[in-house]
Every structure is written in structure tokens, then in C-alpha cells.
Image 1 (spheres, rainbow, N blue to C red):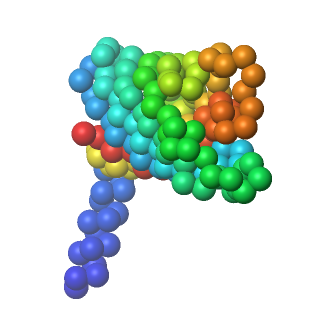
Image 2 (cartoon, rainbow, N blue to C red):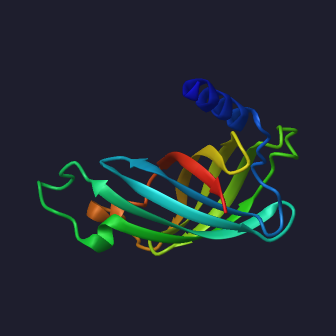
Image 3 (cartoon, rainbow, N blue to C red):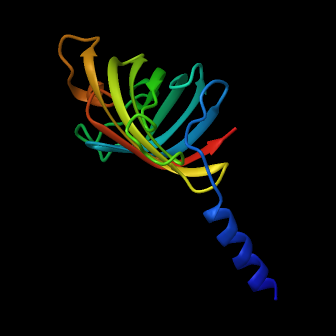
Length: 165
């Protein structure tokens, strides 16, 4: 009997309507896995809706595995961490996607560079979903990006879970 109740609750929670972006005052928290060349880490972000299709937020990434990138030496913490201010334009409804799905291109301003990203969220319930996001620097702060400065200054992919707050 307990198993039947648990299965019923799980099925209802997955089938229930979840909305990926509701507009003004909507707050999303995302946590996931960051992948880039020679490094992997964790990524977390918070976005707050300002208007029907606009949100701003902050994101942080910390690299945990650097695959002995440079001669087996260890990078400093400043090389492993990046914090970004984000701006997103939510265009899921413009593209005709279901309300539980959202596509959001955006811009990032970080301690390492100025860049852009493209993300996708899919909510299974009103509070839980998954996301994938790819980003790329548009403008580097240094003239030559080499060594550990390449961390956070290259193509990256984030995948993980998204929550409504």
C-alpha cells in the first residue's frame, strides 16, 4: 500500500503543471555541474524576474577538477572561481513552447570576462525542473588569455536542477 501511495504522489508531481518563467517577481535557483576544457566544477545561479520576459541575477562557478592542466601544478583559488552578474531574456513563449519550458539567451559580466549564454529550462512540477546552459566569452579583460586564465574564458556547459523560490 505504501508503495502505491508513493508511486501515485510521484506520478502526480511529475504530471502537474510547472511553469518555467512566470515574469515579474519570479525567482529561480539553479545548481548544477560545470564542464569546460581541462576542468569541471559546480555552478549555482539565482535569477529574479523584472518584467514579463526579463530577469537579472548572479551566478558563481567553482572548479573542482582541473586535470593537472599545467605541468601538474595547482592553480590558485582565484583561478578556480568566477562570479557573474546576469541578464536574461526569456523567449519560450515567443517561440511557442509550452509554459513549463523556457529558452533564455543572456549576457554575463564577470570578474574574468564579458560573455553571453543560451539556456533551456524544463519544469516537471511547480517547484522543480532541469536546465542546460552553454556560454562563451565575448570580450576578455586580458590581451592574451593563457595558462590558468583560460579557465572561465572558454566555452562552457552547465547542466543541473532548477527550483522555484
